[in-house]
Image: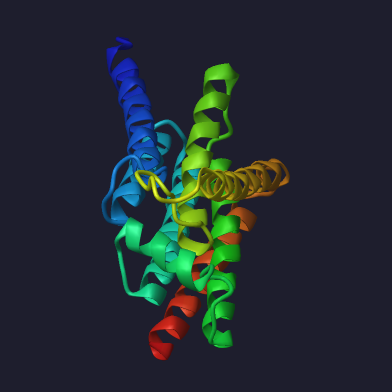
Length: 226
């Protein structure tokens, strides 16, 4: 039996994951400006690449995890009425993090969506578990991209590229806080994925379903409060 189809599928999976990660990171670190859907498109490519190499159960978990993450990011976009990454960062730099800006009901909905997105990220990271040094490196970059998406949506400060009038100390503090928040989300997801992988498929699917329901409820609260 020829191994050519299998190798082609593996190459396609790697290309989707690498390309999606590069695309998402390019927008999320501020190197490229554009809409919020662009990095989500990159994460969708990563999810597709993951799904090409795992069993059906893992495919479902990866898809549900991505859906919850994308939905949670959408809650933040709806909260501020913008899909533009620069505008989303700017409004949080002025008014404060999405998680903390009232009214209380909307802030509570944002917190619930962020927690649900973290649970979804844990499931997404663990489908499939990484293997080998290259697998761990790739998984780390993909997790970083997803963590940056959540930080940008719910907390991330404005990135101050091309702003010579702003003091260097403020630029460093802003970038440092942003990087620290992303690293914290990434580490929490990686640590959470380890025990979650030990759960059965039905339990993990149940967690994914709860995340989606929570995001949907949060979305409804924000819509009703608009």
